[in-house]
Image 1 (cartoon, helix red, strand yellow):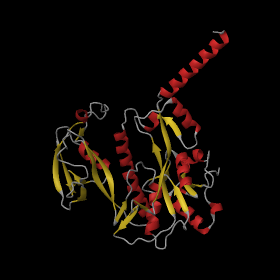
Image 2: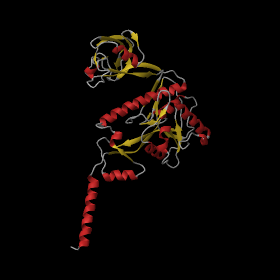
Image 3: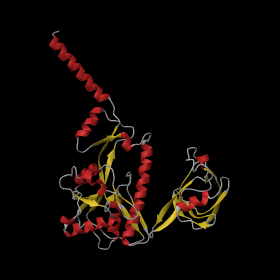
Image 4: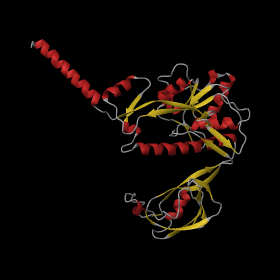
Length: 371
């Protein structure tokens, strides 16, 4: 065989080998793409996304759409070829796998975490909305979790409301901790609780009205957690985690299935306010989408996958998009045609922007591009 032909054959075989390797070789990345959007003022599966019971609500028009991102599963690893294709596309983000799924996290773990974040987001959205409207919100100190094998297991339960420790009223998680750790390991702590009762289906229901005293022995923190820091290892514990749960003067249900994470908080708050405002119609009939976490005080926080959410909003028909200020730098790199970004720092600020949209004063909207 001529030397030139042999060289070409060798080069061709090497190229084929490299192509085979690139197709077969997996790389530790995760792919993100635009997900569906949901109008918080509309319906999903034939039911309203937001339902208010026990207080007057009002008709709304237009869109206040929350946006989502689709993410490949924890076990999925693209081939090198697919990863390169993803990097070249505008509607796909390829990010290191561990950025999305911390080492060892399974799909089930991720789903549980997303569900918990979504529930917390719903709670903060309700609270922020009612605070904005001047409607009082109550607080209850409840048990968030009970450690398996701990002294509290079988005596106290997740959802129980704690009203006192050793007879002293408590309203914060810090007060509960102080009431327990003032004891020595082996001593008893008396918790006054309002038990969380279950309905006929076995699901958590409302707290029963009667209080009961529950005596729980303590153990040293190292007994439940051998890795407890030295300064805490000998403190008395019972094995519970506590948190604050909000209570509301009427019922606000958010009905979305298979959606997780905390990023819909802002749009849920806006949707709740729109439905509770007489003659509301916050959007003026326009198509507004957005994203952003929200806390109880109405502060808007940044989220992940902003570029994919912009594409999702544009594809759904949005004209305006609420963008957390912490995401503005990334969002302005590639703004989809026809979409106006509105910088959002607070719920109150977002409401003022909607007022500007209704009145046609869109040139005054706070812009992500503004320096």
